[in-house]
Image (cartoon, rainbow, N blue to C red; front, top):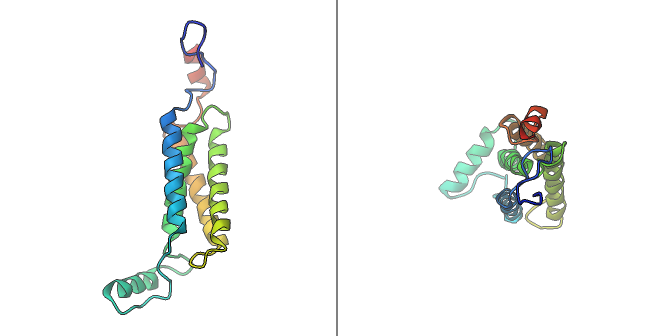
Length: 157
């Protein structure tokens, strides 16, 4: 926003999100969506080739309850939420909004996966997505990408 002289107007809410911020978040969301629709190796393990055997050994080595895709869910939604924090910085509760949008996006993807034969809806994946989103938004705030503090707003004036 600008005043009559073309200078940026202080909104009291920190810097406005840029087109680059929005583009990065949207592009990463698209990558997550596409990655969520492609077939993944089955968790049955084994296989006659070296890759199948290595995959089976990896799955056997994971602690009980942790799937092969869980780290991808956690990191993917952490990154998505962290990219959304600058986009929502004009809102006082922007980081909460960013995490909520990332969680909703992840739940939507789970719903889209339900009818796909090689994918499935999984509450566990939705929970890991949510955990990653909260972590990503928190890390973005700690790194200074969240809403401006009161002292930052005073400095703008």
